[in-house]
Length: 139
Image 1 (spheres, rainbow, N blue to C red):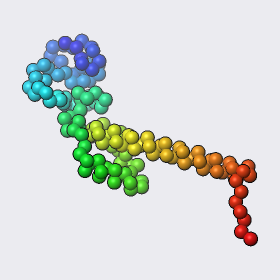
Image 2: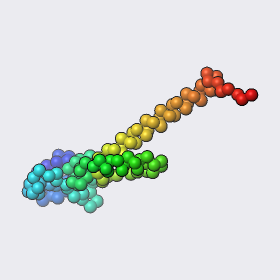
Image 3: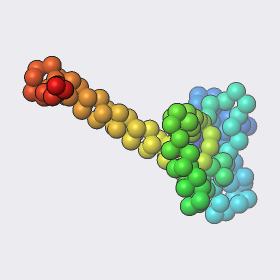
Image 4: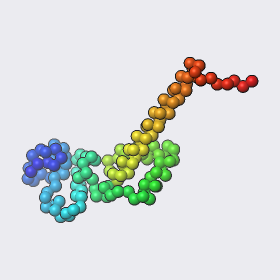
């Protein structure tokens, strides 16, 4: 039997891969619930791979409802709180995959907006210093 994560050969009695720490899924355990995503328990002290959908619990793969998306977007409108929440949701090992993706997209958008704002302000300051932009003085 081979590890389905890293491909290393495993003993028949192994419960976890000795190389990557992934839990070993027996065929009889996976066949108990056909058609449903099988969620491996994360081993105590083992390595958790959030990019491997086989390691995600079933509740983390359920898409968000419209009301949950609206609530998340409203929470992201609150200054400072939005950055804290987006960082927590985007980089947590566990949690709803849709919420994690939404938070990562929000962080990317925030980074782009801040970069554009910095460039615009730098251009305005450079224009003021070089005399391209003049500010009328009050009389």
